[in-house]
Image 1 (tube, one colour):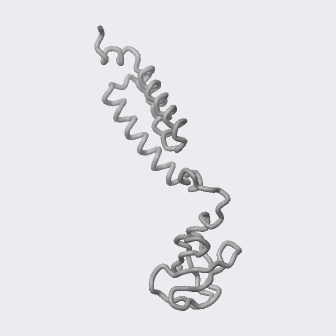
Image 2 (image 1 turned 180 degrees about the vertical axis):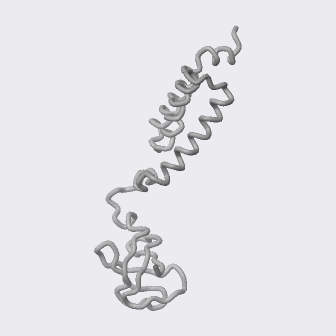
Image 3 (image 1 turned 135 degrees about the horizontal axis):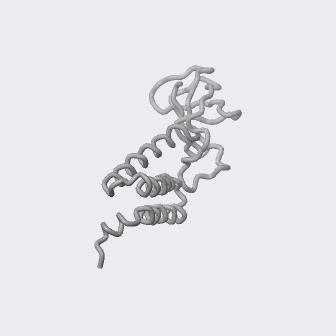
Length: 153
């Protein structure tokens, strides 16, 4: 029986193609979107290992570095809506306004008040003990039922 290293050296393309296939199958089963990056990089490494003659160690090193780089670049340059957690409801307008800015409609009494955000008026609660006057800018930090959690922006 031939040893696995000699089989890899004889056919590195198919070894990396199998790695890519495993990631793509796992992606199809989970639907996370994150397993596309290591799978796609594995396809690239399959070609590099075959045509550039990468050693097994170099191929794994290239795969790790390119996978990390591609994930970081994707998080930086692709729209945040692509990274919505599973089960996020696209019709949930309250959940989508986290991070949006608006204005206080009235001065906050204690920690309670009303804000105008995303074209609607909402009941709001201040995140910390600050005070806000009417017209002050706010940023939405969370949603609890029909009430927004805000902080001064």
